[in-house]
Amino acid sequence: MIEKLSIKNVALIDSAEIEFSSGLNVLSGETGAGKSVILDSINFVLGAKADKTMIRHGETECFVRAVFRIPETSEAIKALEEMDIESDGLVVVSRKLNDVGKSSIKINGVPVSATMLRQVTSHLVDVHGQSEHFYLLKEANQLKVLDKAVGAEATSLKAEIAKHRGDRRELIEKIRSLGGDEAERERKIDVFRFQIEEIERVNPVDGEEEELLAKQNKLNHMERIVEAVQLASSYLNDERGALNAIAEAKRAIGGISKYDGAYDELCERLESLRVDAEDIGETLSDLEQSTYYDEEEANAVDSRLDALKMIKRKYGGSIEAALAFFAICQRGIGASSPLRRRGGKVFEGTPS
Image (cartoon, rainbow, N blue to C red; front, side):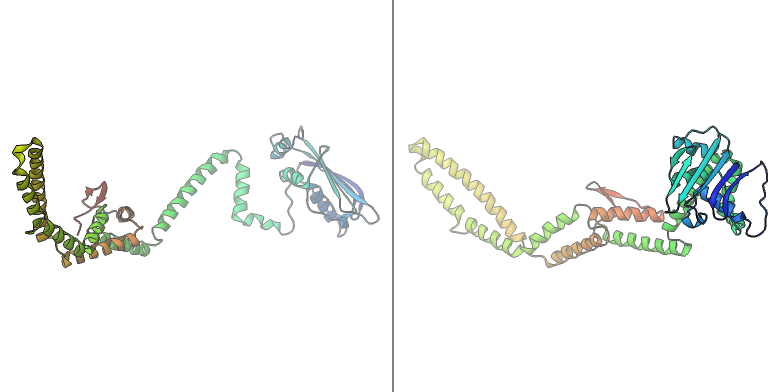
């Protein structure tokens, strides 16, 4: 509580000292007697903004000192300890203002700033003006008063309430992420179902695109492939081809193989070459019969690649990302489906 207030050269007051007793203290007097000046002086010493107009006319400075007696458990004592200001429960605040607007403040004789002063005095006095009885009409202020009245017992309860409020906010955010109201959530589920069905229709398989691109590349160059196979086959298998030439060379060397072991060895090598060339010729003949441009197959490959490209474009840029998105959509609607594996990835059904 405030015990004593000393005022000097403030407005109409030349010098005054007021001692306060415990309990209720009332200031009464006629209009202009100085009641408001006393309140202004209290606000001034508590750290309110002030200007030189509050200095008594003809004087160069004003001065106010307030003496408070508070319990050692007060928050004001804690604030003083943080500022390294000692107090045994007695707090003396003094403030001076001169006619050039310079202010000096001391707490228990230690100079402090206006901000430091307010950190202490905010725990000492509550000042209410004429309209400030509306303070308790605000719910937030009611809670502050109740918390202060309950004291330390409210700490654990407030912490528990804060946790529940946090949980509530988290649940609200989760509900909001699902689409707000029930109708919006149903619309989102419908979108998920459509996306699932679209991916299922294409049924992308990891590694499939690379195989299709290789096949497409082969089909795009099929004319050149067919021409090369036919030409190579003719070089080996025609009447004047390499196979007949090798056979003729073997017969020529075979006629002299008995005269020298080197000729006999060369004859054996030509025979081996003939066998290999004959096998290659047969393979080329088979390829010549089976290698051709299949327009239906080419269209199917192009169509499949277009479908995979669409899925990649819409669902993450890669088959892997599309499959991951597919799994997210299924979780979103709580769906599941029989799956098989290929290439280390999970997918459903058989690729088209």
